[in-house]
Length: 111
Image (cartoon, rainbow, N blue to C red):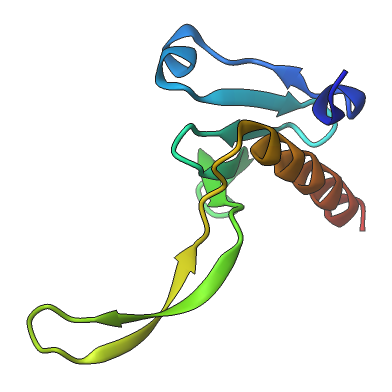
């Protein structure tokens, strides 16, 4: 049993996602999906109702760790500060990071 199963998250990976190396888990407590991509990205996705229009919208947030970097423009040569995402190469590390994200979001949602 892994950490996501212990948190009662359900794997809802579609066949297309599986073919692409993506895993998708649903958290029934917060009605949120968590995605682990073979490329190293991890994301949280949820549906909410827009307060003005009443329409349902889907929001997806990156959960990868970040670090500051410098981007040099190809055209002007000017340096800019930027934020870069750190890819998580190991599948097991991505699942562990998703489990931490589930706990953090549950704590945030309850406050």
